[in-house]
Length: 178
Image (cartoon, rainbow, N blue to C red; front, side, top):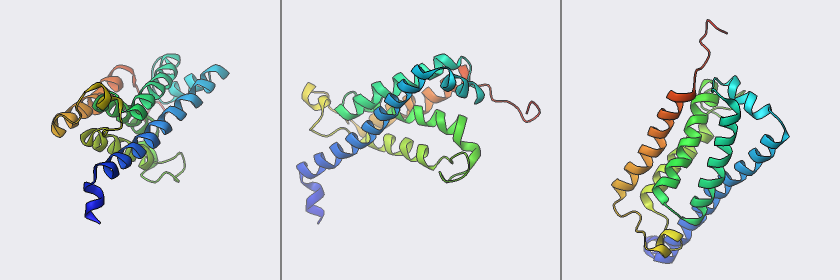
């Protein structure tokens, strides 16, 4: 059985399936958000209700991020950056919308298990790389050129990007404000 995972085609297939699922799921969320943005100000107002400033900008930001980096994950392009951006978008969701609801997704308001799982898997997949069946490989970009550097890139983009974004735009209501 261990020979299966040391076989290059088995590894490449496993990584491809993971990329297609995770990137495709993010892209699908982006498509759904395009429809929400076009339907009126509801999505922007919801972002503002979470304490994010400039709701229309945030609605467009999340939509474009999911579309762009969903596609690059599917294609296996700029892998550590793409997975880091994917982690960041869900870490923002975790902090702004889901954290207060507890761990389980079936909790009222949806807990954070789903978005945390996407963040963790994105970070791990950044270390593993896109496999040979990817645009990175076709272009000649070697990921992971070093798994620790790939991890560092994903963490800087994912966690660092989240911290910068929240510092710039998130002003949650305090308990006293209600």
